[in-house]
Image 1 (cartoon, rainbow, N blue to C red):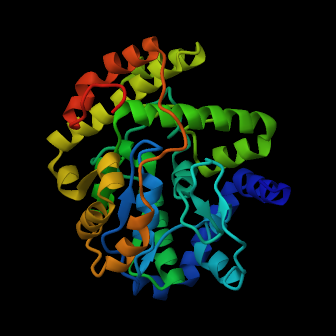
Image 2: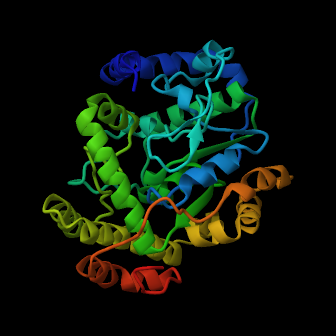
Length: 362
């Protein structure tokens, strides 16, 4: 995190109302063009981090005519059209591996998960574990909804695109509201077997926690951009079960990492399983993608995703991404006997709902 980006990020963060005002002014000046820009079937990739959401986001965003937030948009997210015009001639640097150390290489034009900054601006408690973070189909927030729809249209206009995609993991708590707001939206829900998923989450948390300790600017970036999945300010999503959230935070604070993550995995994916079973609107909009199937049959899975999203002529995307996808081999999913037992105990029932065997090595 370069110091200048930290300074500008702080400026945008602490004077957020000013930037929201500029965003509204931008929309006003572009009103005629925005009225002519159709917002059709936006696509949202959401699930727990480390489930394959970044890969799916990148593949969908690579389809011609699909717009998304990009690395270069931070921190000036609130005025996307003006910022894209200002950076149109910026020469990209050579690709570099992202901080996750997961062999994903990025440039300033790479897709990035920055939409959460908009939600933070209007819902300041949306990452407060003490509050129910869910938004339901009967809720209405007109000021946010006007800003949000205009924002997406401005990105479409800036990129000359017809469709929008966002990686937005926290939308797992907002799907009924999101589909009331955008009824023709398409949802992609990646899911991963609990033990391997938890191993990846634990590795990332250790790495980011150490990085944030050594580099506070990196922590501030994650807080300001709405990333609380791991690291120095890790926060669980509250899906209405306050006691379960309390247990997860207690496990994490007392060093029981595997059990805490197992409880978290179970809470999120049990909630999603119930939602898919009981909410016809969510079920119709959603496509579940198993991480293991994506790694083992990448071409087939990418075709399924593109088909679900209504993105035709996707073979160039499949041809570009499928040969690069395989199961991770850069870390071990090794647990102590007690950790493996905790994972089985906490996740067995919900893992079965998603078709996973109850072995810690799956």
